[in-house]
Image 1 (cartoon, rainbow, N blue to C red):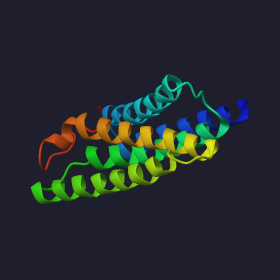
Image 2: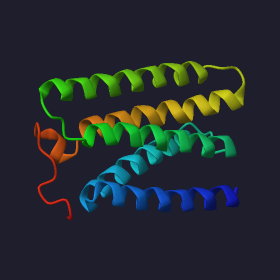
Image 3: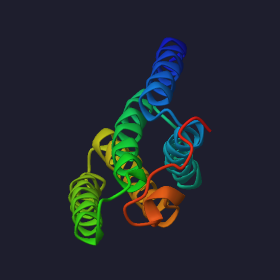
Image 4: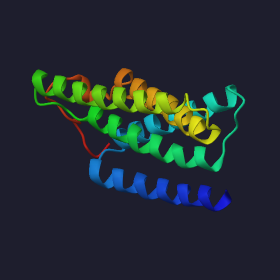
Length: 153
């Protein structure tokens, strides 16, 4: 368990560094990482509230939550070139989140405790990630056709 958490920490630092390099905006990088971290925290809190605790499989499932949450946040933080592109982004992310929620929601109904735990962990994480990315939209994405005014901030 300790080695897995160490590997996740190293991966988190590498992902944060890569995001900072690619986005060239500390504000956007913090928003992206905050959205993903909050989704993972919501998923973990849901497991605790349901009295399940976290198994090693749940910890690995959180990596999937992080990946999906990062995808949702990246799309919602991208500045669309127009209303049509913004709708296309929103539809694509909504379809992805809905299909993931459906699949992992069904998995959470399994009679096998391991599969049920993975399903619950990912389903709650996907729901949290989608809602956080959608409702907590990055400010630059809210304005049609714009991007960060100062990419170095």
